Length: 75
Length: 217
Length: 164
Image (cartoon, rainbow over all chains, first blue to last red; front, side):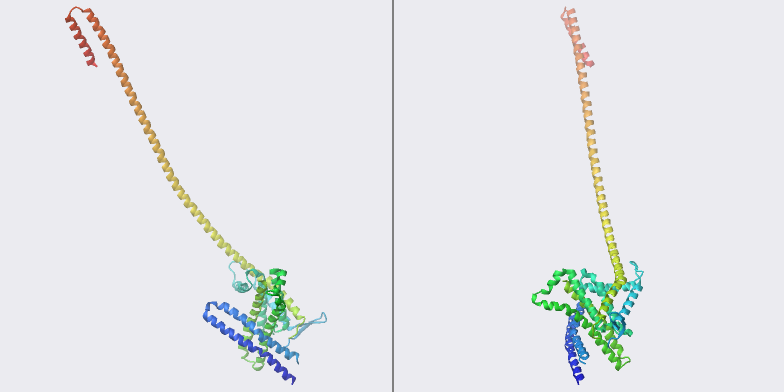
């Protein structure tokens, strides 16, 4: 029973990935827009996109870590 | 999934040396051997093909980091390139059957602590201790606790990002391999090992450079 | 996996060692070589630029020298012309003066000659007159004789003048 609850807790923690997914999706869409508008600025745009994605992804990673922590330390 | 202890150094009541560290040693050895092997007979005029390739790679890295931290701070470029090279090798070594060392929290934490030291050192070296102490109270003294926390949040974020990405990729790959051991893992391996690995190495050094630049302003 | 222990320190040592190794064997030599090449290229370009500048400087120098030579020659020719003109003028002047002097001398000589002749003539006339007077004194005796003496005197003086 506790195992199930722990698993549910880990699953809830991993739900943070939704935010990261939406955020990265929006960022990429805007980046594509920007590249379509100004193809010559592609290098700078993709650099900033990668930076933004890395930062946005951090939330998903934190959720993942918390999930791991829940699984490993609440056994 | 857990990191195995390869051997124990029998001092201080036994130091357990993990897999990741041993793989790191292997990577170091390979990198050192390769650089000794290829960086020979350098010529100023009429360089050979190997030298040209090496030079173009180094030059690309130099320009990349110069763009981030500026021409005047190029003394930090070798360190950043070392980290980038190590991370690229560590993330790609999963292709050769090793476990990537970066899925071990110790390794990423060590990397992040070194990054933290470098970031703060670069700020102190550039602007002096006084300015470094003073910059916590900018723009208002109220934010000082947050600024001080940022010293530790930045490497924590770096460490956790790298660790989480690599571990996530590794876990997904392991699960896929358990379900379908043939053919299906190959395209996934391209994504998780090559693309994600290189991307994370890039992001790690990129963010380190960015933080350094921020600190040196 | 989720624990921090001594491996963290090992990792940091590993990184520093790797950094030192790579710096010694990879970055330093390569960057040195690249720096050397860069300086070499910069030197070459600088050298080329210098040579070009030097060539330009030489060219302008030659041009100015050529222009100077031309000017000099013009100047020399002008000087020579002026000198020649002055010499010519001087010679002409001298010749003029010499000629004038010659003419003057000749005139003077002529004048002197004339005066001398005149004086000779006068003395002759005087002598004639004296002789005529002597004759007249000798032949005081008749108007005819007077007349004859007078005629003779005139004849003699006229002859003397005619001879001249």
